[in-house]
Length: 348
Image (cartoon, rainbow, N blue to C red):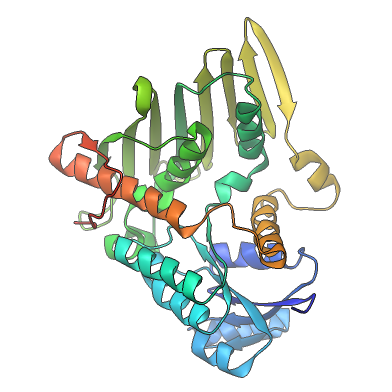
């Protein structure tokens, strides 16, 4: 393989634009193509970025044999078809979360990556935020002992819950779009599988036909360990997007939020503050908002070059979707849903 990897980005909305900024920072990678269905967007990209654009992924793959990676930044309902087309053309794929709203589609994507011998990574970017990564490192080092309880909070203004996000068919609603960030990270921290789910998922602030904008989720683990996820876009316009995370063990509590790049350790009336890696990266010229996506993309490129397994495989992402589906079932039936080792229910 050549040292330089050619990249095609599909979709240049909010996430696609951040991915583009991150790709520019990754060594030995060139963004060769951007795919957008909108002619006005393609014209603007060509004029401002000087990058070749295409109206479809098929056109890009046909015209440019030097594309090695396809970065899919489109709404979830298009992920499977785009990923399959890319992998069947021999390209590695980075696909935004959620990987798909369908377990059957996820299984097909997973099989195709194996058959075609290409990498498929799901962009659960929270694992690559410096504070979250630092907290995971401290948990693995045993500073709080085995996690027994945690809570995650992720909210934004109601004015941000717009466009395709409000379509349940396209986005899946708040659990699949927003809560899934914390579901994935909590599973990673606990190092164990979730045994049961109880949830309340509602549409509180948007039109009656809109996808749900509010979720409270109670996740059960073995030995009565529990985690709680609160996610919603119901705050007043202008309210800053806010995240908080707290995890408790027998030796102490770790806590942090998105206002600072510090992880706090509360232990025996003592507070210790741990600096994440964000400070040094920003001093090196990396924008704070781009850094997690750079970390994620750089990891994926390393996995390709070293033939390593990406941190978030399609099977890991599938489990997150199973849990999201269980949360929706619990909310609909007002009952706790127990998770089996093999769970194949689809969204109802």
